[in-house]
Structure formats: C-alpha cells, structure tokens
Amino acid sequence: MHDYSTQETFIRAGQKEKDYWRDLWRYRELFQMLAWRDVSVRYKQTVIGVAWAVIRPLLTMIIFTVIFGRVARLPTEGTAPYALLVLAGMLPWQFFSTALSDASNSLVSNANLVTKVYFPRSIMPASALIVSLVDLAISMSIAVILMVWYQHAPGWSLAVFPVYLLLAVMAGLGPSLWLSALTVKYRDFRYVVPFMVQFGLYVSPVGFSSSVVPEAWRPLFYLNPMAAVIDGFRWTMLGDTALYLPGQMIGFVVSFMFLFTGMRYFRSVERGFADVI
Image 1 (spheres, rainbow, N blue to C red):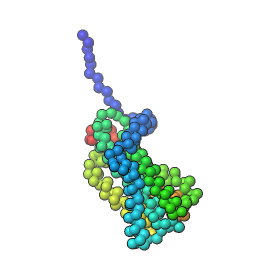
Image 2: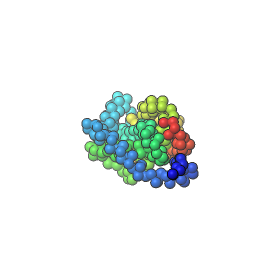
Image 3: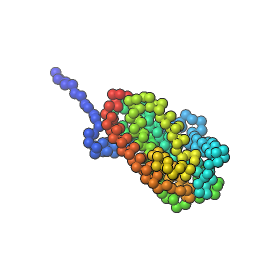
C-alpha cells in the first residue's frame, strides 16, 4: 500500500532584479511567439489586410494637411511640403497610439494565460509594441513614395533615425507598463486610454510644427515626450527642420522616467495579477 502525500508547487517570479531579467531571457521564445501571433492575427480577418497600416496615416495626413495647411494656413518648416511635415509627425504618433491602446489591454485580453502559468508578465505589453513596429515599417513606404513625388530627399540626419526609433519605443513602453498594470486592477482605464490617445493627438505636434509654440511655453510643451520624438523623426526624415535641443533633453528625461517608474510599478504589482484579473 502506497502512502501518497499531497504536494503543492509554487511558481513565483524571481525575487531579485537579476533573477527577473534572467527570466525575461529564458522566456524570449514566448515573447517571440506572442509577438508573431499578434502580428499574424491583426489583419487576418480584414478585407484589405496590411493595407490598413498605409491607409490610416495617409487619410489622416490628407485631413490634417487640409485643415492646418490650407484652412488654418500654419507654416511648414524648412523646405519640406506641408504634407511631408504632417506625415513625418503622423508615423511616430501612430506607432505610439497603437502601442498604447494594444499594450494597455494586453494582460486582460490574455487572462487565461496569465492565470495558468508563470512567466514575466512584462512580456505581454512589450510584445504589443512589436506589432506597432511592424505597422510603422509598413507605413514608412508612404514616406518613401511621397519623398520621391515631391523630390525631397533626406540628408545625413537620416543616419540618426535609429536613435529616435529607440526613443519612440522607450516613450511607448513606459506608459504601456503603467497602463497595462492599472487596467488589471481598474477596468475603467479601458475607457480612459482611448480618450488619452485622442487628446494627445491634438497636444502633440502632429498636424503642426513645434516652432509655432511660443518660447515661454516650450519647456511645458516638451513634457509630452512624443513632442521630442516627433521633432526627431521630422529632423531625420526631412533633413532641414529645426531641432530644439533643450526640448530633446526634456523629452528624453521624461521618457526615461516613465520607463523606469513604469517598470518599478509593474514589478511591484505583478505577483497579484493572477488573483485580480
């Protein structure tokens, strides 16, 4: 007769920071799988598929060009046509807004996975950013076509584009960690995030140049980290736009602080996700 004793196995996140980063590396294949799943599913049941990644910024660019360029007659910057100015601002904003919307719901929409097995939960909001990066890469084709159409070639500043792409990722990941964790506990954030994205579109220099902002208001204006990202994208893509260096520094510091505090907060509440979700 065998005596079977009841055994319970507890799987928990690494208590030390180094253990957590080690877990992130160990679960890199899960990260790749989730990112690939989200990319493949995104346009699976749509009629025109990945063309949506081109149509959305193109239509928004046309509307903003008419409203701000033709009706409001806001000035362009440098020698670039107003349409290129808007597009160069729309591309990073579309990346940021899509990443924020998808990442904020990533934990709730994968509740079954979160409650069953352990893995670093930060993988989920991070994988949502990969989908937005794929959209950005597809949308960049519009910029290439329009630059050829307007015969406006970028300058040497295009070599710095990866730096601002990294800054855009950092600016998107920090708030995504905050919002994904908050959405687990407070489901109201599912309705707050779309409002934040809509409001942010008009306080970010997407449809206008940052040069129209009065000098006295610029430090406050660049507390929005996307202002620095959009300026950077325009400078690298169009070549002859102005770059307000103090604003760039403010944007970098704010993005870093969002990322640092977002990771700290996410880690502090991560172990309770399975119980709350």
